[in-house]
Image 1 (cartoon, rainbow, N blue to C red):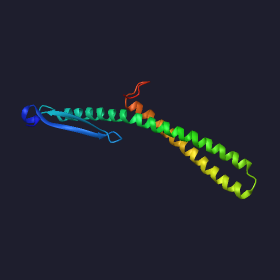
Image 2 (spheres, rainbow, N blue to C red; image 1 turned 90 degrees about the vertical axis):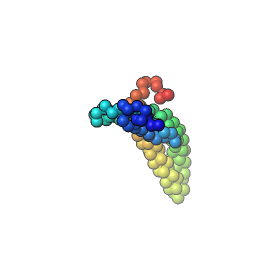
Image 3 (cartoon, rainbow, N blue to C red; image 1 turned 180 degrees about the vertical axis):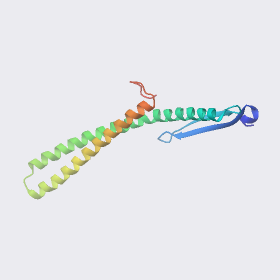
Image 4 (tube, helix red, strand yellow; image 1 turned 60 degrees about the vertical axis):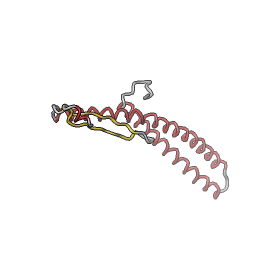
Length: 142
């Protein structure tokens, strides 16, 4: 027997579901009473959406933090490779070999700049998500 049949005050139920990354889902269920006005129904639905969105963000923040940590490690490696290529270019005497090494250095420099940009954008998004998810300083989202 459904809930409305058991309780004449319950007119309809609702469920909101959202993906939360890495195959996770979040859902919330609520009910509308027969006495609820449209404004009250909208308020209940909006509150449920706020809860779902906050919890989704709280699950995504650690994933983004891990992604940023990986990008920082990649950047460190890319910076080391860029410096190694600078040293090779400086030590290379033959123009053909120097030209090839310079092309490699240019590609490495582009990779470094791309990683820096990606990290900066990720850090900005992380700050927005931490604020949206209601993280306090030192809160790791758990």
